[in-house]
Length: 55
Image 1 (spheres, rainbow, N blue to C red):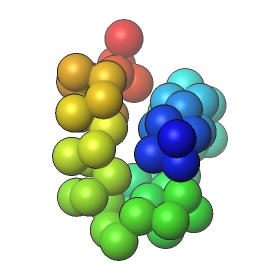
Image 2 (cartoon, rainbow, N blue to C red):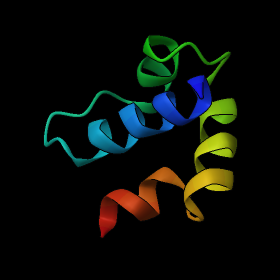
Image 3 (tube, rainbow, N blue to C red):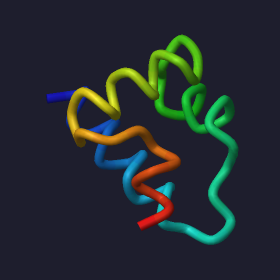
């Protein structure tokens, strides 16, 4: 449940024009580092954060 909340928060952050960089976002959401956030995001959403933000 917590992971889904964090991914949801990352999705919202990725859509903001002033989105923080992935390292800062990862720290804000409680991930160890941006690579961990990217892996969990990709596993849950199906694409990495940059690809999601580009759409």
